Image 1: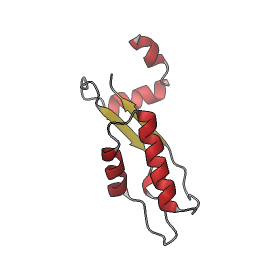
Image 2: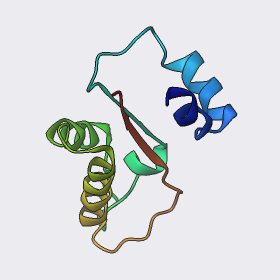
Image 3: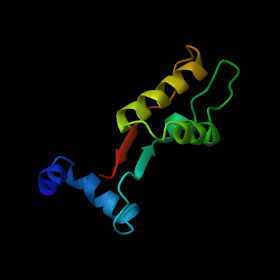
Length: 99
């Protein structure tokens, strides 16, 4: 089963993850949350920035959610913050939980 799941992740991402985040076996239930700067640099109507602190708070509050729920919660939080202001940068988010 593990080999099948590994093949679902593109080789480039597997290589990046093994170099950047792999520090040995992870405890069951530990999560990994990756994002691009388009998320934290999202702007509101007053040109305020969403910021890393706000994102950290949302991720901590949603830590018991499944990865898809955590992503959805983060994206809803950013959309509410922007209140209709279009994004000026792309946003990529990935969440994983070790099982």
